[in-house]
Image (tube, rainbow over all chains, first blue to last red):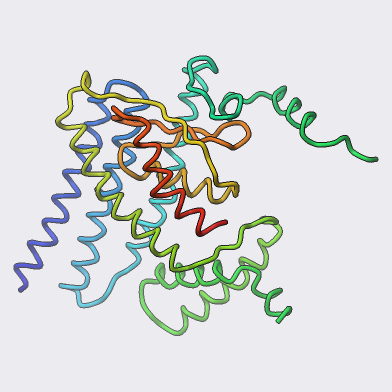
Length: 133
Length: 165
């Protein structure tokens, strides 16, 4: 029984390591900036997740107590990873793209990153009725 | 009843904070439950002015279902992305921008959708349109952009509509 559990912990750790390496390798291999963002945001999730699962399993199996604060790390990771990716993507749009090189913004005029103060004035002038006082 | 509502302006947040505290302490005891609950009461009460128009969350079962679907998709996403990174030559890959027209109106719901898209197979949300009616998504490999758009709308947006609106 103990050996099986040890194997399981090791398997989780090795899977995590593989995904970590793939994520980093993707950063080198993919050839355009936006695609490069995909590899680290996703592969690291399972990479870190695997280590955390291994840690929980190890605590339960060998140290005789239940450890669950690893779940918090997962939660915070899921909350922060999309935001980091979004910020990097926005920097890319801001510096490398113009309104004309971007795809159509649905029914709207342009994407929020390319918004200027003039746009905002124009919008508020056309939408809200003039103030009463 | 009104007094209770005043004291607990955000019951779900109270529950979430208590649970978070218990998980962080990492050892079950009545002490930490009481302290976590105190935090769960005080923090929503003090930060109440920060969220004037927060949406009402309905159907907790739907939320659980959504989380489960997304978790499974994340595992799948990792494997798909790893396969693309390792075995697909760059010349065969079709990276693409996709515009997703939004039916969701609540900012919180749109944020949740954007986060989900980033965490799931081969897609990454990059921007929102200036008036919030469309979401810009980048695809790692999308030979058929329309199919990706339909799947996101079908799989995630529909569920979020049920939860938030």
